[in-house]
Length: 172
Image 1 (tube, rainbow, N blue to C red):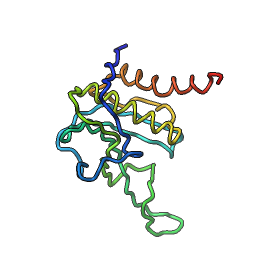
Image 2 (image 1 turned 60 degrees about the vertical axis):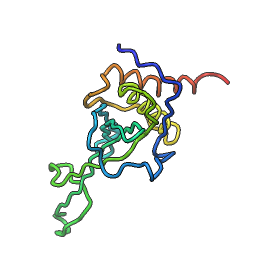
Image 3 (image 1 turned 135 degrees about the horizontal axis):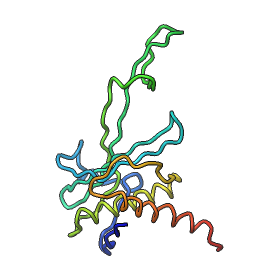
């Protein structure tokens, strides 16, 4: 198992869902240059899933971890009603229209932190915050890797979810 890089004392991570990046420094649209970090999937049921692809970019003095998701815009004909219904995903057919959505997931001031270290702690702290805020559970599958290996993503997940589960069972 690969070790995770040491956490720099001066690297502060902000989860964009809780502490949005200020508008005056917030990048618009999608990044021009980025590096794939990893992709993971949560699959609670056939019609309830979440697939996140994480990408890292630098923006001015900041590291930005982006999450990309696919938005499906699908139209189908309901044979019983014989009319077109919009915004309904027909899972039996391949999507006709997919739109890639880029959102800032987390960010931190780039104070001489390398990309691997930034990706590690931007992802770890964002998952940890989302776990605390929304009770996000451990992902169910790896889809692909980039900057972070399978072992590193597993180690990050262990620190987020196994540590939190152990905290729940420790007598107070």
